[in-house]
Image (tube, rainbow, N blue to C red; front, top):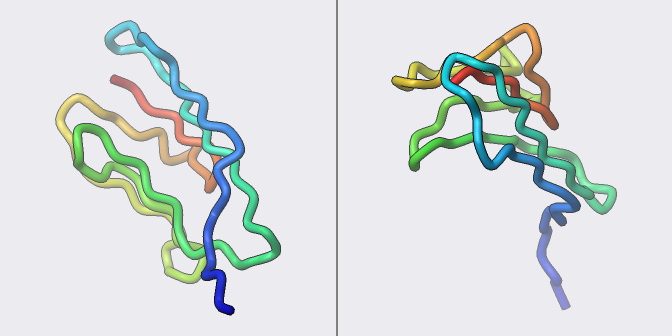
Length: 84
């Protein structure tokens, strides 16, 4: 029986409120259950603003989204630092 592959999200940390023009740290912690990570993508209002794909070059990409500034120097698979 094939149980399929799934990612088990252990914890998601997102501040409930952010002061305008201040940074916010978004964190997603997950258990891959021994599997290889394919990608992590972050969205705001249904629009992607950051992607981490270890097999791609570049590994990280950020996308223009009004009201969101991505701090590319502080981005990684598990953590996104953005300014609203």
